[in-house]
Image (cartoon, rainbow, N blue to C red):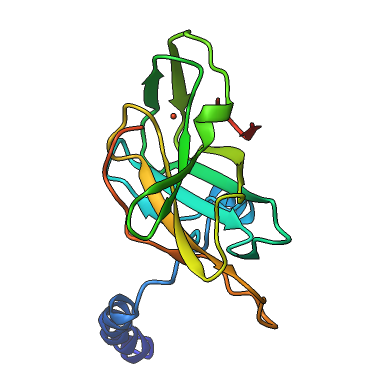
Length: 204
């Protein structure tokens, strides 16, 4: 008889404890080792300047260095094109030649000022480039500024030949004098089209 009251109270408290446990919000999951590694190398979903293409889970990024330049002093712009596979399957891209990317410099009116491939040589060798999930491909090219004029804004457009969705554009400003702090490149609206380089961190 002495133990009935504590046991009764325990049985009454147990359902209340279970309800309280169910009402607690779930703990925020900690990032996995893979996600932490992807963040460290810049392949996280929050990577800056990346645009989802809607094609095979691929995202494309484009950067210009410098994004604001004095044409009298800067002879070349370094352009970096990045492609990341955010999907769960291998993405395969077929190229008719050894050219992977094409990069153009255009005026605000759309007139072509510079075409990177005109000074390049490519082999007529069909190639398939496979991009694994979470894999990052990066291509770097240099563009001449000889035809740029101070006081004008230009569009740098990069794309992968034969792939309509793999295209991105940003703007760069040609100025007379640079301000104290140079701002980052300003993204321009993506454009659809067709267009062409090699796998993994390959520089031209």
